[in-house]
Image (cartoon, rainbow, N blue to C red; front, side):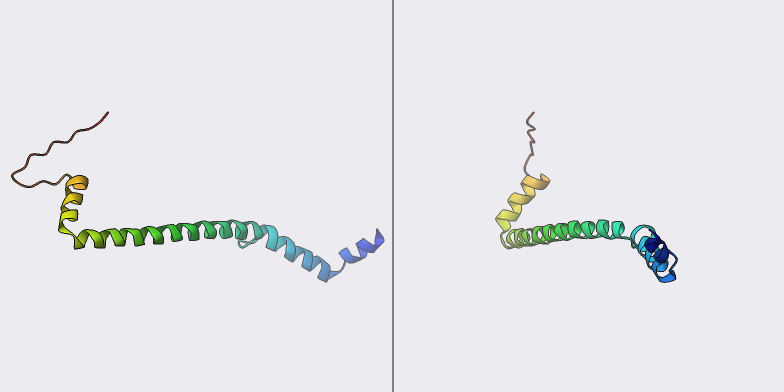
Length: 95
């Protein structure tokens, strides 16, 4: 027991223990926060990959729509309920 008491009086041991305690529990960049930030970064990277893939799909669909006028007209009629001046539009809602 006296062997351990000898080390607790040493300035370098106390300083090192205080530094370790400070870095693990008190500092704004402590281990717990680093773990949370790391998991958040991983989640955001996954979302980034999803949105990049979704962006590519949307770009391909847009190119297809802009190159084909009949497909563009069909899309406008179905999605935005657009019509020609001489037409009547009836929307049937299923319950």
